[in-house]
Length: 126
Image 1 (cartoon, helix red, strand yellow):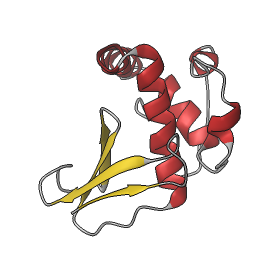
Image 2: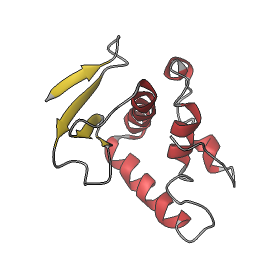
Image 3: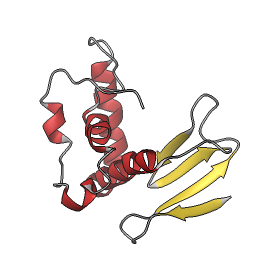
């Protein structure tokens, strides 16, 4: 089952519901700007905004470079204190603004770089 969520072209995100991607235990994954959702998992507007922020990051870096930098930063953060995934600068930006549904209209390019300089960030579990 496929669909689009969003009111404007900028906000639209293609969603593909299926039984294989992502792996069991995960509800959704953004791959190259397409949101893959497992089965009938619930996806909220906040979830969609989080993934749209990642799509904006992907577009400004180029999709391949986004994934390379994401993986490298995750590997660097693995031995550090705290949750390596939650401390990736791109995740910090997305979690930090996921509740602001108007964020993308005012977001500066490469805003995630601001979060790379921070040493500690806490997030509410969503």
